[in-house]
Amino acid sequence: MIRFDNVYKTYKTGTDALRGVSFKVEDGEFVFIIGKSGSGKSTIIKLMTCEERPTQGSVYIDHFPIFRMPRTLVPVLRRHIGMIFQDFRLIESKNIFENIAFAGEIVGMPRKKLIQTVDIVLSVVGLRNKATAFPQELSGGEQQRVAIARAMVNDPKLILADEPTGNLDPLTSEAIMALLEEINRNGTTVVICTHDSNLVDRMKKRVIEIADGYIVRDEKDSGYTCEADVPPEQCEEL
Amino acid sequence: MSIRTLANSVREGFQGILRHPLVTIASVTTILLMLLLMSVFVVFSADARYIMKNVGQQPPIELYMKLDGTEEERAAVSNYLTTDTDHVLYFQMADPEENYNEFKTNLGSSSSILEGFDYNQYLPYTFHIQLVDPSFADEVVMHLEAFPGVNKVMQERQVMVFLTQATTWVNAGTASAFLVLFLISLFIISNMVRISVYSRATEITIMKYVGATNAYIRLPFIIEGAIVGLVSALCAWGITYFAYSRIYDSLMAQVEPGSFYAILPIQSLSNGILLVCAFCGILIGAFGSGVSVRKYIQV
Image (cartoon, rainbow over all chains, first blue to last red; front, side, top):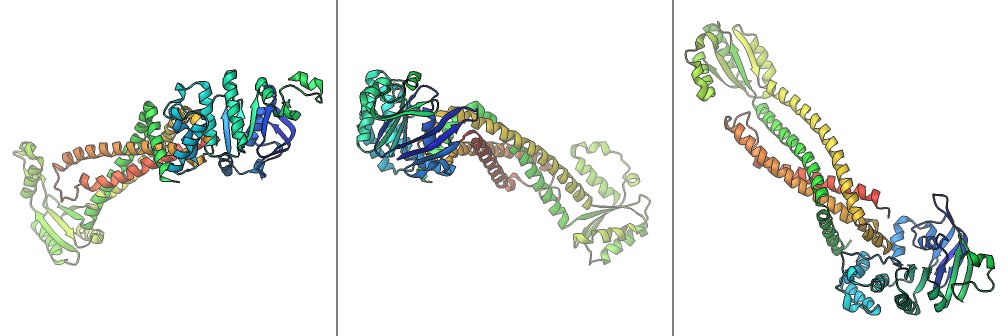
C-alpha cells in the first residue's frame, strides 16, 4: 500500500525533516508512527498526501509513484485517502450530514447514493441521530467521529490520522481507536501519528518510531516504549 | 461538472457576497464607476456616429452673400444652382428679412432684443443647398466660392470634422480612465477574494484534503466576482438610462427629432449599453476573482 524508499526531505528553511527514511506498509495494516514533536512524523503524512514532495527518494501509494505525480492528479490521489486531524476540521456552518456529504459532493457522487452512504457511515460511527446537529453542538469525541465518518464516505483504501486523540480524554480516545480498529478490520489500511503512549501500548500494533528524521524503530505488535533490541541512547531521546 | 456542483458553486458565490457586505459594496462601487465611464463613452460614440451619419448622408451647405452683393450676383449663383442638377439636389434662397425672422424664432422668448434691428444692414442673403451626393461637397463649394459677391460658404463637414476629433479625444481619455479604473477594480476584487478566501480557509483546506480539484475550489469565488460585476453592470445601466433620458429630454426640447443634430433616444441605446456593461462587468469580476484566487489558494 505505502512504500518509502530512502526519502529525504529538507524544507526551504534548511530544516532536515527526514533523512533517508525507508519503510513499507502492506494493504490492511494498522500502523502507529510515533516520535517527539519535530521528529518528522507530520512530514511523512504530508508526503503521503502530496502536500509536500520529497527532496530525494521515492514515495509510492498503491504502487503509484506519487513523488513525481503531476499537481493535477493530486486531488485524484486524495480521494482515495481519508484524512483525520487532531482539531477535527469540521465546517461550523454546515450540519453533520452536510459536513460528511461535502466529501462525496466534491467527487461528484450521485445524490441518491450520497444520502445512502452518509446514512451508513453515520450508523458506523454511531451518530445517526445527530445528522441535523451542528459541530459546535457536539462533544470533542463526537466531532472526531464525524471526521472519521467524513474520511470514510468515499470508501478510501487508506486512512491517515494525525494525532486523532490529541484533543480527547482517555475514555473517548479509546472509543475513537476502537472505531479505527473496526474500520481496519474491514480491510482499510490505517496509519496514525500519535503521542498517546497508553493507546499505542494497549493496542499492540506495528510501531514506526521517528527521531530527528531517522527511523529508529519499526516493530510489529509493539508499544510506545523501546523493545530490547533498540539502542538505549535512542530510547532516551524519546 | 454536474449541474449540482454548479448550483452549489452559485449558492456559495452568493453566500460569499453576503458574508462581507462592506467589501462587496466597495467592489460594486469601483466596477460601477468604471462601467459608468464606459457607458458615457458608448453613448457619446453612438450619438457622434448617428449625427455624422445624418450629416454625411446629405450635408447641407450654407452660402452667405456679401452685405453689398448685387441682384445680378445673386442671380448668377441662383442660375448655377438651378442648372447644375447633377450635383445640386435642392436649394433655397433666403433674404435678410427671412433670416431675421428665423433668427427671431430661434431666440424664442428672448426675441424682443431684436426689436428695431436693421436687418438689411447686418444680415446677408443666404442660400441653403443640399447635394445629390456628399462627395460632391468640395467641388461645389470651390465653384461657389469663385462667384463674385459670395462672402463665405459653410459646410456641415466642419461639424463632422469636429465630431470626429472630439470622438477621438473622448475615446482616448475614456480608454486611459478605463484602464486605471480597471486596475483599481482588479485590486479591490483581489482584496475581496482574499478576505473571502481567509474566511473560508478551513473549508478550503478540508476541500483540498478530500480531493477537490482546483476548479471546484475556485468556481464559487469566480461566480462571486461575476455576480458583483453583474450587479455593478445593472446599476451602471440604470444610472445611465436615467441620466441620459434627462439629458435627451433637455436637449431635444429645442431640436427637431428629424434634425441633423438630433441625438439617439434612450430606447435605441438601452439594450446596447446593458449588453456592454453586463459583458464587461461579468468579465472584470470573474477575471479579477479567478486571477486572485489562483494566487491565494495554493492547491
